[in-house]
View 1 (cartoon, rainbow, N blue to C red):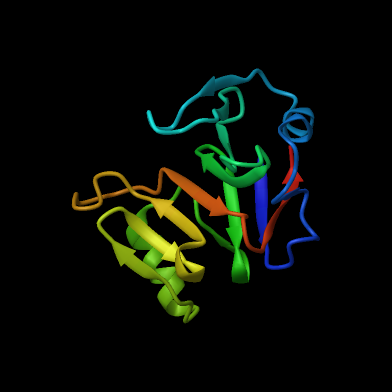
View 2: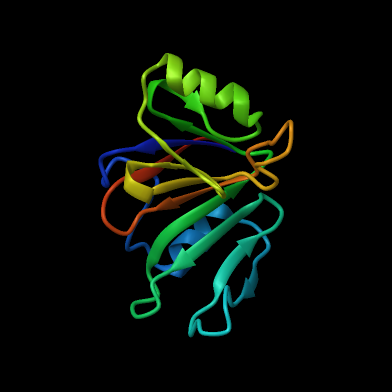
Length: 147
């Protein structure tokens, strides 16, 4: 699947506040529910067939974030693809396009942590971007461009 990050919270297909049932209908995939941590009261939906996790607000049970795994793609500003890429190549592209980001021991953060690219083994010679978490709780949305 190809997702595009939209700054406008109302323009995308996936947005904060969607019900769990609406998200499940949209993805049309087998669901496995699990608790992200032992302290969680609600479960996360894992759509293993399409490599997506949907996270829900612990109080309202409404969508608050989406975690996207390879082989999916997430297109960010200026047509930068954040998944299925070598970290060094992605950082070069971000620098060339003068895009703001923060790099830490887990990966890359955009929009003050609103979008996080997880890079396991970041300290190795050829680290690869494994997943992207998009926090939809305050603003922004995701447009599904291709199924």
